[in-house]
Image 1 (cartoon, chains in turn orange, green):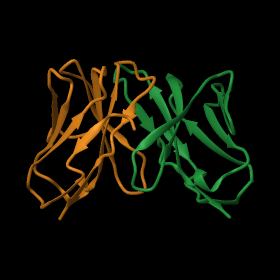
Image 2 (spheres, rainbow over the protein chains, first blue to last red; image 1 turned 90 degrees about the vertical axis):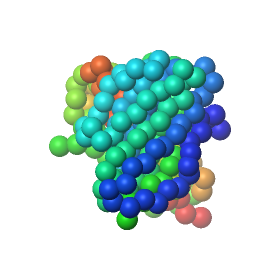
Image 3 (spheres, chains in turn red, cyan; image 1 turned 60 degrees about the vertical axis):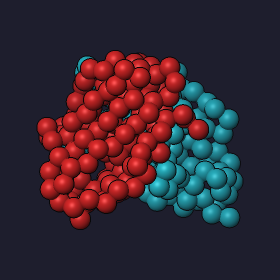
Length: 112
Length: 111
């Protein structure tokens, strides 16, 4: 196991609601990246946090936001949920270099 | 055009077969290259990094051709446990320091 944990494992929300997903990084890792994986697709980069600061963002609207805490755990917040937000949300921790990212088990979000 | 393109498969092969997956990437500034494996409804796991000189890990061999912007993965002596989706991944070092994934190639090894 990677030591990266995510909660909750599954979530069902309705359109327009807000959701918060959580990630605990592997011990010693100071960087957390978030990815969205739609069914049948590869993961897509949402954003990355390094030492509590956003360190890059993919092509996602501002209603996707996040933060990182002093212990390097992280949250992903999504406002005004849309049906297309239904996906597996993955976080990955690393030591700042991209060379190796370790993924958590993911949170499956279903928006009805 | 997708930044990383893979044949989605599925590749259905018998146990013991040799199977090869290919992947192309569009950004010549890509810096690092990987193959990840993803089992059904699980998270991606790093299978191996890919180097210009090529590298081998047991039954798995990865090759990189920077001139053609092409990455390959060869699996020899396929096992039932190799059944999974194989994701081709590149790091485009534009400051985002993020991984760009292909859509994956599904492999089904049959007894």
